[in-house]
Image (cartoon, rainbow over all chains, first blue to last red; front, side):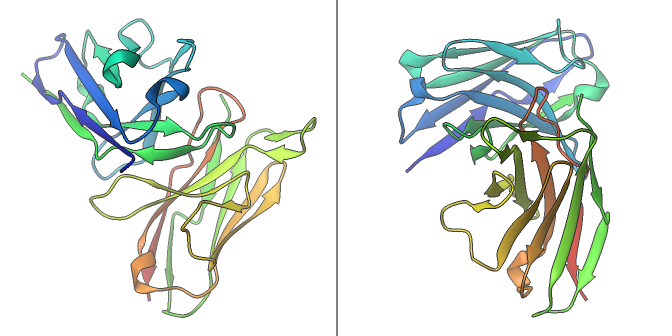
Length: 118
Length: 113
């Protein structure tokens, strides 16, 4: 089965750090680009970051300089290292696969909640 | 950034009736060299992650019922559900993938009347 499973969410204090992981199975991980999208519960989707199959990265302005996206093809895992966390970073974080040759997001994980609070 | 605006914000439609959701981009997302519109539609049911319904503005993802269709070009796009079913209750999002960041519309909540 093709799937993505996120982990690593939890409670962190403002200014703290957290690393999210997204483990893939059922397909050739190294061939695809991946994205992180977040959603405040009850609100809309916000695009966060992306990494190509050649390690080219992109960040939304809201997280640039604070978040780092990376991948380990040997572990079929995508990461999002989050630092200097703020209350406005509190959300469900989804990883998603880029539909090859298209750019839409065809496979999504179930999401992991990040809570930023003292 | 390309701004995606959906309307209406919410919609109530009777079972078996047609539902129409609109999405407008702040600039054209039609790539002239391949004549493709870089627009996707997603469905998000309560408590679930988004699900890809349509890409290239009008191509249904595998397994998506044919009552879902997408249309439009340039800056104006429409998602149509031809005959609303109970399982279609969800929030629907458009997204452009023409440029980064790949921005989403604010979402349209679809309910049963």
